[in-house]
Each structure stands twice: as structure tokens, then as C-alpha cells.
Amino acid sequence: MGPMAQYPETGAALSGLAQVLLRGPSSLTPEEREIIAAYVSQGNGCRFCSDSHAAAARSLSPEGIPSVDQVLDSMGMHGATPKLLSLLALADRVRVSGKQVDEESVASARANGASDDDIHHTVLIAAAFCMFNRYVDGLGTVPAPEEAYVAMGDRLAQHGYLPSSVAVG
Image 1 (cartoon, rainbow, N blue to C red):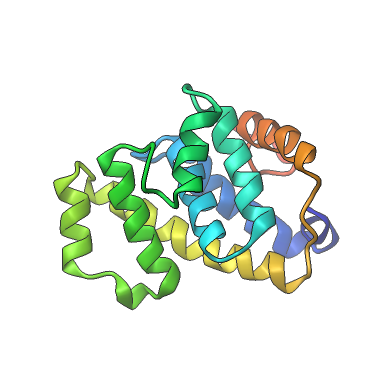
Image 2: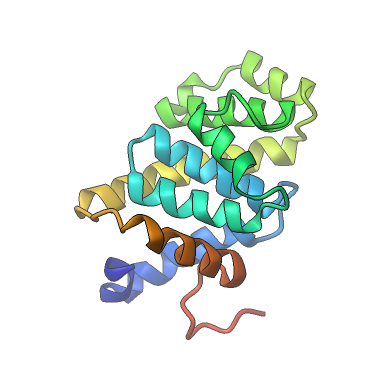
């Protein structure tokens, strides 16, 4: 969070974007959105983002740690609903290149119960997290100690992404 605080003019915009994407109105649950963010970040090799968003998903998960970890440990192959699996596949295509998204991947998501809103939110989260991952890695952010992610995830799950000085209404 250091660069966000040091550069408040961009930090506020980036925090606001994360808040809208991960906690704003959506057809996807906050847990599903955090899993998509963690999944894309893991695929991009951004450990700080992957671990912090996985921790937030764990904190939000009614099933606890195993469901989130199963999805991430297997890169989406186990522990998720067919809908979420197809959305993770779509997110992975966006992660590689938006041009990788084709009619077949969208049709697969729809066939597994994803709505147009689900698809929209997934594509937007995946695209934004490619940017966030590059920002975090480009500034040389050092991954936190493992135990720090639990507290970070709980804070993100409970309070979201806006700086504490910003009123949430």
C-alpha cells in the first residue's frame, strides 16, 4: 500500500477502481471476484496480489479456506462451480490477451450459467488485475510474510479498498 499512499492522486483512483470491481454492485459475489483477482494475479506471477486477494477470498468464503485454496492450487481445475471454472478460463484468456477471448469461451461461460453481467465483470476484473499486477511488480513490491496476508485479507473483506479517510456510503 506504500505507493498508493505516497502518490494519493493515483492511489485514490486505483483504490476506487478496486473498490468498484471487487465490492461494488455485481452479479458475482465478492468472494468470486476476489478469486478471479487472485487467479489472474497468480497466472501473472504476482505473488503479493495473488496472496492478498486469496486471503480476502478466504475471509469472505462461507466454506472457509479449502475451497479457495483448491481453486488456486489447481489453477481452477478443482473446488469451483462449473460457472466459476468457465469464468476463470475466460479470465485466463483475458490475462494472456483480450484477443484470446472468442465466441467459444463466452458460449462455454453462458452454458455453465454465467450471465452477460458475469462475463462483463470477469473480463473487467481480469484486465484491471493485469494492470494492477504490472504496477505492483514494476515497483518491486516485496511479498509480505505469510502471516501478514491473513490480517490483510480480513481487512479487505471487512472494509474494502478505499482508504480509511474516505467515507463509504
